[in-house]
Amino acid sequence: MGSTVEDKSRAAWDDVLYWHDRLRTTVPLEAVVKEDLLRRGMRCEKDALAAYADYAAKSYFIFTFNRAPLDALSAEERDSAPEEIALTGGPFGFRRTIVSVRLNPQSPWSVSLRDGKVVLMCGDRIVADVAFAPRPPYYGGRTEDGAPLTEVAPSIEWGYLLYLTVFRICQYFGKEEECRFCDINHNFRQQREAGRPYYSVKPVARLMDALRQTVASGATPSAYTLTGGSITTKLDGLDEAGFYLRYAEAIEAEFPRKWIGKAVLQALPKDDVVRLKAAGLRIYHPNYEIWDRAKFEALCPGKARYVGRDEWVKRVCDSVEVFGKGCVIPNFVAGIELSKPFGFASVDEALESTGEGLRYFMERGVLPRFTVWCPEPFSELGSNEPAPLEYHVRLLDLYKRTLESVMKVAPPGYGPPGLGRSVFSVSSFMDVLDPAMPVAPFLD
Ligand code: SF4
Image (tube, rainbow, N blue to C red):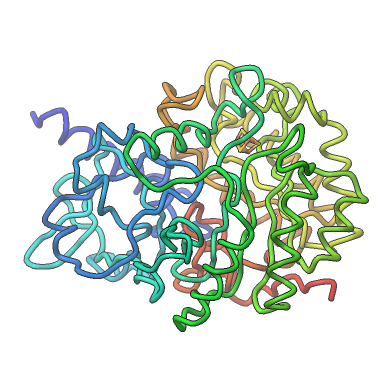
């Protein structure tokens, strides 16, 4: 009989093969592995990290996205884990699949060094070859006021996206307001305690300095996401729309339409949405997180309190008139539907509910997307196990079928759809789409 670790690894791999076999026409093996890596996390072994000299290290761009606290990781993982890995080749002939690195010392998955090659392993089974995210040419530099460029303008999605978290704290604060799956405020605290140069608010001048250096370095991102915590009162004397608008206006004034501008904000009244569009942003992410009414209210208490579930849905749908069909892209945190104690009791119920939400939004021109939930230890749901792989794989199948029958377009601002081409690293929803699917056009 094998050891517990071996048994766990074998069970994990059997689960991957089982769900791939059940849905092989819509969800390729690469996507099943990716979902499992995202929900469980992975280990990065010391010699594998040492084998790469030059790559983009994990920047903790907004949340930790780890299954363990920073101080429970090895020093090498804490300081040197890559932002993303690409799975290729190996015994299963993987087509390139980009995966965000979420660390978990207990995971059956590891990035390891075998016969001089960095590989992905499940227990003692080699699954694919691994490459680390390329290091953007501006990494290592600093702004004029001394902030590391990696902190101000980190690059994710294999260099496609600049992730601009301009406010690292959320004003939904504490048990009664924070979204229960979110660790933004705890990430900030952990990073500061670890001595990292992490700032709550980024001055506009610092951000613009960083973007100028990014351009000068020869880096060629395609999009930026302007994001941060919610603002329920005022910040720098501005409401939420006003606060984030000043960054969008500065970027678009100096670099008009150089990148696809996206913003992750609360569902705002239409007048504010019009201001965002007028500033030059082209994609709006009023993240909805979970469809079911009671579960939205239980899991997103701040959103329910300050905006309300019905108003949130209405504002999401109304925004399509401003941004255009397919350009309002609220995120669902895939997996929280099955979290305890508020979630559904079965995968079937969770899929039925999320499927209803997908159809509701898509029929109104809204194009939802996912990130895979990985329970972060300092979030309210941190003691949960992740949702089962079954949920994630069946959700991908459901998403693909719903998108193909209702919207018939892929979301813009995510690069090309399809396995081997997609760059979105925190869910496989782009990997499973048909590469021939057209991408929704911008309104202008
Ligand atoms: S709105 Fe919710 S998910 Fe977003 S940063 Fe605040 S607590 Fe986190």
